[in-house]
Amino acid sequence: MIRPFSLARNVGIDLGTANTLIYIAGKGTVLSEPSVVAIDVNTGKLIGTGGEAHRMLGRTPGNIRTIRPLRDGVIADFDATELMIKSFIEKGNEGRRMMAPRLVIGIPSGVTGVERRALRDAALVGAREVHLIDEPMAAAIGAGLPVVEPVGTMIVDIGGGTTEVAVISLRGIVICESLRVAGDELNGAISRYMKKTHNLLIGERTAEDIKVRMGSALPNDDHDSMMMDVRGLHLASGLPRTVTIACGDVREALEESLGTIVDLIKKTLERTPPELASDIAERGIMLAGGGAKLRGISDLIARETGIVTHIAENPLESVVLGCARVLEDYGRLSRVLEPNDQLRGSLD
Ligand code: ADP
Ligand code: MG
View 1: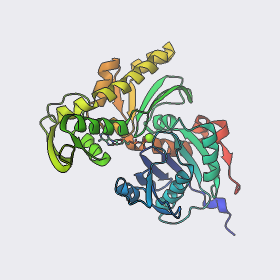
View 2 (view 1 turned 45 degrees about the horizontal axis):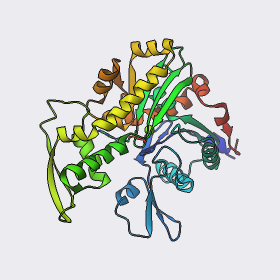
View 3 (view 1 turned 120 degrees about the vertical axis):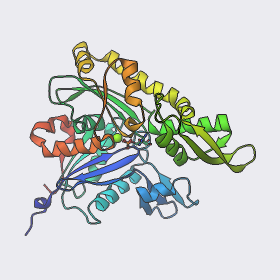
View 4 (view 1 turned 90 degrees about the vertical axis):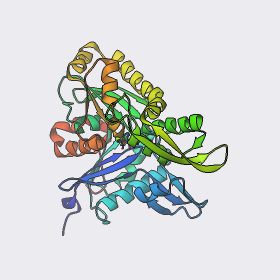
């Protein structure tokens, strides 16, 4: 007879506010999908998850609800979160249930103790072991920062719902600050700008498209001549209308929110013990998360803090790669996990 845990696989999961990623040892990143679920409100049944649910955002009839359960970095809807994780693990494993996996799940640092326990219990069904790791720690490991060394490093993870700034040394988070200003808020700022200056209502997905194609934190000669036609609903006439915008317009829209992110980094540096702060000044700041891909953001942070700022090699995957590294190098890295987070499943 095959013992269940001989089939155990090491699996890393980044439970992000915007995107969930799954990494299976020996296979790599097998899934990267928006953290969205669509549910039939009458029956409570799952209609879809990830990309298929994301396409329904803003387009659902009354009986279907699309939910981003972790949108603000806390678990707003626990049942939806549980359904989403289970569906993603299955999708990531080619539709099959995984036998007794060993999971490391990266979660936003704002998720409370009660939610952590509930999440672990939910994930434990069918798993051999479940470990939770704070996303800034996972991002730092995934970005290749020397988290076990006695040196201070700073990771700034700009995700969808939250920006998390952490100072790490000797396997521990020394300081962690979190802010609900990140990619979603940048989209919101673009929507507000379009409404205010052009009287044009645009949807969340259009705002995101503008940000990714036109957004920047600082002027850039190569990019700034680009223009974009934006379609939306003209408020005065109530009819669809197209407006042409320039990169400078988008930068103006983003300025205030980016300033808030920069202020959080400065505030965290001020609170950092001097030895660690001087390590950071010497080694630089590391950016991760999708927000790190905004043009010019590392230069803006470097200019405002006076500290060299690097972007992780693959900012969208830093957290899931960090989770995977913890599993691969468990002997050296398991101490980054909270003792309470090392619960064993009933199969062990
Ligand atoms: P989370 O970890 O919270 O799920 P992610 O790290 O996956 O978030 O990042 C998602 C955010 O990154 C979204 O708000 C998305 O709009 C933003 N993003 C992705 N690519 C870019 C880009 N090229 N420029 C600016 N923002 C981007
Ligand atoms: Mg993230």
